[in-house]
Length: 357
Ligand SMILES: [Zn+2]
Image (tube, rainbow, N blue to C red; front, side):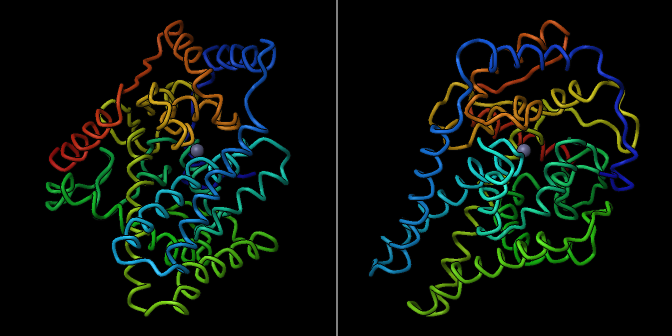
């Protein structure tokens, strides 16, 4: 598939053997070690658990006669379940990493559309622009919080950015309704993401986008209005969206927009192979926290995810030692924060630095 002009201009050096060795070692571990790769049943159980959590939270919130404090707790539960579906189900599926064939992946990837965001546009934003051109300004869509946020050294700095380490946390919360209700439609109509042109959604892709938006608006806003006053629905819709947006943004920022991650200059040839670039621009966190790893769908193993986006996330803890080993062997800097709060503090310091210099 031809790459859009701006992102397409960025080139990487050829692999110096690092990526080939990584792939060889991981292939041996997952396919030839005699211990089968995790997938199928484990992912089915995990998917079922998260979706039951989501549907139960929603049903109790909308259809039961909950008091204000009960409804508030249910809204938090719903937000956590929606974010969990994003982390652990749709993310694998839209990468083609969900166990099963392409049809299973497309079907499970549709969960993203049902939760309000187009999986067609996510494919371009996330799989192509973010995963190929990680932390390269002008190509990686995840760096675009302009004009309020300055996330990379190549972005223009304004006076107000001095306070971004304080106010960006609140803006992350508003990211989701903007993505669902504005950005997706604008991207599809203009056939463009940032300065990069994309093919306009057509046929099945367009139908999926429109059906997803309609179903989302129905369950998130229209159906609840049959059972509750309109302003109560808007308050809960806003609160759940805010919390989901904050969770999604923070988890993705902790792996790339922090002090330890590299930011190659914009538009240049990247003077290293693609796999080295991925490790230099990506950081793991809280790898020993099993509960967090389960909930985040392995996104705390972001280095492993960027190197092997088509491997089901349940296997990231298992291949992490191999990745670290090969990095040491080839002199590639591999960074992992011990805890999530360590990564959060690093993101805060990065925002403060980008606001000042
Ligand atoms: Zn990804």
